[in-house]
Structure formats: C-alpha cells, structure tokens
Length: 457
Image 1: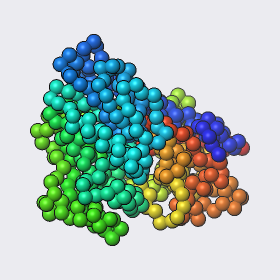
Image 2 (image 1 turned 60 degrees about the vertical axis):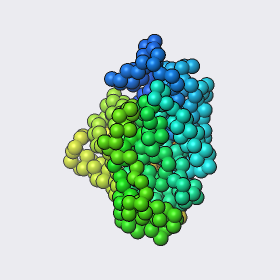
Image 3 (image 1 turned 180 degrees about the vertical axis):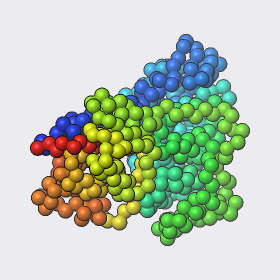
C-alpha cells in the first residue's frame, strides 16, 4: 500500500508518477492553514490588521477564538502566535486526529463526515462563548472545510440521530455541498449566520479556508457567521428533487414543512443589520492549490492546462471528460502538446448504487483508468487535499494507462468494482491508494493528469 506520496512509483512509468506526486504536494503546501492565516493577519503592537481592516486592541476587552474544520487547529495555532496571551479563551472543533498543540484555545475532536456527540459538545462551547461576548469584545472565528459536520448543534426539535441520518441520506443521494449545507443550516442552532446573531453586538471576524466550489461564503461550513441566502422552501425543493422524503427522519421533514409554511423563523438573511459588525474573509481556496501545482508542473517541463478549480457534477462523467481531453492531446496536440499536464480542482459527487468502499477521488481514478486503458503514457492522480476521501483512510488514488490491464492479470475486474462503488478495494489490491494521513488543510480535491507520447518500458 502507498504510505506516502513519495512512494507511488511502480517501475513502468515511475518518473511520471513521481512527478504527479510532487505536483500534488506543491498544491498542498500552497494552502497551509497557518501560513494562510499569517498572510492575511498581523499584529503591530496594539493594532490587529486583517486585510484592509484594523482593530485597536486597546479598545477590545476580551478576545474569543472559536472555530471548526479540518484545518482549524493550525489556524488557531497561528492566531495564538499573532495574539499570544491577548486571547481570553477559545474553543475549536476538529476531526479526530487533526490536532496540534495549543495554549490558550481548547481543542475538541469530533466526528466527520457524520456528526457525533463530541461535535455537539464543541458547538455548545462555541455558542456559549459567543453568547458571553459584549459590545467591546472581539470574536475571531476560524472556519475550514468539514466545519458543517463538526459544528453540529441541532435545532430544539431535532436530535443528533436525526442529523446523522440526514447527513448519510444526503451524501448517498448525490446532493451537492450547496444542497447539503442548505438543509444543515435549517436544522441547526449555530449555522446559517446564527453564530454571528448570538455574538451580536460584539465584533466578529471570520477567517475562512474554502472547501466549496465558487467559494460561496454562506456554504462553507454552512456559513455560521454569514447571511443565509437559502430558505426552508429551498430545502423542501431539494428533498423533492432527490425524492428522499421517505428516507429522512420525520422530525426533519416536519421542521422543513413548518419552516416553508412560515411557522418557524428563517435564518438571518442578507441585509440584516446584525452583520454590520461581522467581517468574513477567505484566506485560502482551491485555485491557490491548483496554481501552485501549475508552477511546479511547468518547472518540470510539462505544458500545463489549468482546466478549472470548480469542477463538480457526477464523478464518473467528470473522469470521462478528463480522459477525452487526454485523447485530444494525443491525437491532435490540442489544447496543449505533450508532455502535458492537466490540472483541475473542485468537488464531484458520487451517487451510491453499490455496497463497496471508496470516495469520489478513488472513484474518479478508477473511472479514468478504465477510460484511458490502452492510451499512450498517461498518469492520473486524484486526491482530497484534506487527506481523506469519503469514509476511508485514503486521500485518493493513482492510476495509469496500464492499470486496467495490470488489474485484469490479477483477476481484479475494474468494471465490477466501479459498479459496486468499491474503488478503495480495487486500488488497495494494486497498492495504488494515496495515503497522506491528516494534512490539516482542506480546499476540496486536486487532480493531476500527465500525458506523454513515449511509453515507458
């Protein structure tokens, strides 16, 4: 099994596989959470400078640091470096294992992608700190991908079990992160701007590492400090569109129906004056990772196409589209000649129809392997920047134009594994899983596709 990115180099096209790993690692380095925080925040004596905004610390009584997400621990560590003992107290919730040493801020480890009791306890601590803040206090909120599941505090009539089941259903039906988070916000006491509402009239500053296509602020971690553009009616339509009403808990359906009928108060919307004291600032996103990967790819001599940092939709279809570009490159030299590197980011979705184990990146790599079977030298690496792909311990997988033939010689049938959504066990059998461990960052996925016209022996 691949235990680190430097090991993914079978003999036949080892140079290309090593290049793909190095290009992916460059993307990861570009979105280091602590570096991102320090890039956007600095302290000059009693002045805290965040972008173009300045905060006079001599006029601030208490500073509370809160947050949630896979990258929130190193973000909190960076904020401690900047503010030191000026921090009154704080609490951030992270995925199990995504930790670092902190002095002033408490760390809570919790479940992701399905929320658990620790996540509820952490959210209660965060909401309590926000509720204690007064007009002359500053609440700094550190948000990153995974925050929606980790910042779980169900609405009064909703149980944690209800939210857990709702999360499972939404993940399985192929709903987009925008759709999933619309429902999450309307089943919560802290998401959809409600954290800012609780902290009002204190000043709130959110530093956000984006894991959402398009960097929509109200979708990242379900926007705890952001006006919510979605509505109960939107949630009702999502449930209808995916035909999942009979799969969701009755309490969830009841709340959405009552909210759509106007019997439950909506989340705070754009234009609400409570947000006048809130600053939301993105400090890192997928495009930065993709651009950093592009720089390294070009330095290695590849003609590079930055396809998009906003790829979404069906995973298998996306893999076939990328393979079609490879075919065009090999046949016509367009849109770039070989040696070529295609880079893309974003977050695709998998509609589960089988009973296997995997994630969208592993499934992308498997679908791509089938599509590029028999091409000239081609390598595909697809992995999550957070080090986790679906409910697995793999970040993703690597494949090449010989993967399918190699698998068949081992009596591992690619089509059967793809149909059963069992990409994890397919690549495990080939020792082609990409295993990074916790990366402590999260800006969605990064795909690296390398193409050459000379096949390695």
